[in-house]
Amino acid sequence: MIFFKEVFDFILPRFCATCKKKLKTNEEVVCYDCLREIKTVSDEKIAFAFGNKFKESSIITEFSSLYLFEKDKPVQELIHQLKYRQKFLIGKFIGSNLGRSLKRKSADWQLDLIVPVPLHHLKLAERGFNQSFYIAKGLESVLKIKVENNSIKRKRYTQSQTTMGIEEREQNIKDAFSIKKVEKIKNKNILLIDDVITTGATIRECGKLLLDNGANKVYAASGALAY
Image (cartoon, rainbow, N blue to C red; front, side, top):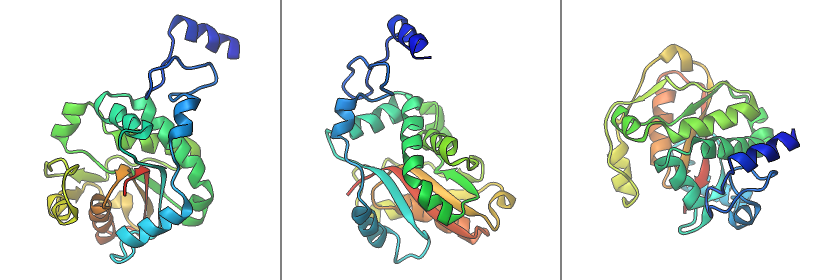
């Protein structure tokens, strides 16, 4: 298998998603040098973020994340390549790593479904795919929990939230989603997935919608966490 991979890499070399250096046979998506620069989110930071973003609303039961989002660092380039350059393998790479970090927690959560935060159909057409869906598919491959991609619909086109404050994000995302198939989420423990969580406004809005339509519990996770 290694021999065939070496031959394949010789014919069609693969390059690091962040620094563009040629990947070695045993490297996947990101080279080891760039991986060393990417910080994982500590349990303490996750606990702090949960208290800051989710605890008061009582919508999200528990939360986790994988990488710390830092500007001008490899993780920002990873997310950028995933969202705007259609590098869906990055999503699966992040999702599978997130899945391995969540294995113990997910057993305690007794999850029934993984639900990626949806894109509006116009944005989906513009980008070609939903980055959160591919992170969810990477999770599915590790956790063996089904991805349900058609339970939530983004019914209203929302502006990019990159430069918005907390209150602006809340208003921007308010009533932006609807449930498509109530029977798929009723009485289920659901894991909501987003690429990056900043204020948590989108996750809270989706989580509230799921609970209001019969979901049992809603958990959340993301590829990266911004402070």
